[in-house]
Length: 542
Image (cartoon, rainbow, N blue to C red; front, top):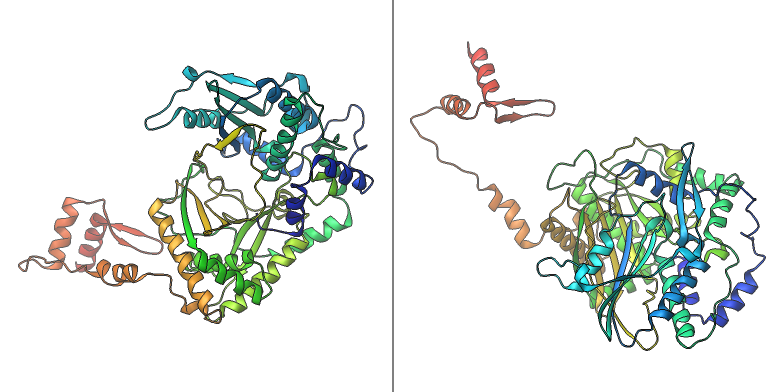
């Protein structure tokens, strides 16, 4: 995620010991309490983010797109009893992990289950069916990911253990996105580490008791929406997105289907370390963040690909604006819609200043749930694409919390889950070797070759602006020398020899006999087949 002040705070909190976390919790009690909001017998509402996922699940529109799965190879002397005890305690501590979603009178509500119902699921090797070229662990991870969830029946958080040998196991964790987000996964990994360490030593849990739960947050969010500050945020976003284009029409490799399947793939690429350093220095000189600079460059590429000089790109933020949510497991992530307007005569440094202003204003108004914004904007619903924006940009600069279990070696099992929530999502991450990029794309629309071209164009724009940030947008070159040769020369070699003894009207008449229904002329509002063109031309001649 692109870093806001809250994101950087989370990075520091993730590194605290249990004792430090206890002190922090004690200090924060009393700051806008979430606890004490529930009334006996009252149905627990969904948060706005949960409500959206519940709705699309009911519609059957997303398939596996909102499944969250991670798997590891575990080597060493695993204490299975301590692992299961740690997971049970995790489920007890966090109500969200034992929540299902019931419906009454067309309205969904949360139902909190008993912690005792959770059990570690043990899987034998002969129960895993590996496809061609796939290891047992990869098949285990894939089968865990593809196993469906039923929101109304619960068991939306599952952990499976695969026994491979006395000193080797597979461990897979799966949950529906309606329960969790990326920050929550980091909370989960940290708590499992401390719990497993304590229980494998025969000690008690070192973690402080939660003072509130996600259901409390959902109640607080619903009740506080009438506050004047929410209304000001809503007014800002309405003004910012007034008359914004609802769709970004990128050139696709095939027609858009009536309903998106959310099937997808990743195209991965790397940007050199030297380029990353040059971009970071350029951003610093303009008192901007690296995310702002990358967003400006991405806007340029999308503008040139689509021909739209007014476009909206989405980006996620942590969404944990309430201090008591920092240690919770739940769906808090929020979406910001960042609008950009581009002019060929504009310099890149001018565009960067514009993007900086847009981003800072958006961060200042990030508290409004995106789902509430969509509800208020009431865009025309289209099952083939997401509302408001269809392209996302993510800069992953939050600390990733790996799972560490004392006395064990854990290696994450790589597995590409073939889904795409949006038409296109560009995920960038700073590494020691430079920027790593992953383009998650909808295979309904795009081929891998198109994503390779888009990644190349993005890199070319970044190289040029790093060298000359005052270059005008219309002067930026996207095409490589090979692409330019192909488009200007190779594809324009269209000369064809025709028989000299036949006139053009005779050639058309012969073609009309061979392929009468094939398109001969395509206009703005009408397409004529060869048969229709032959009939109309004969009528005109007569």
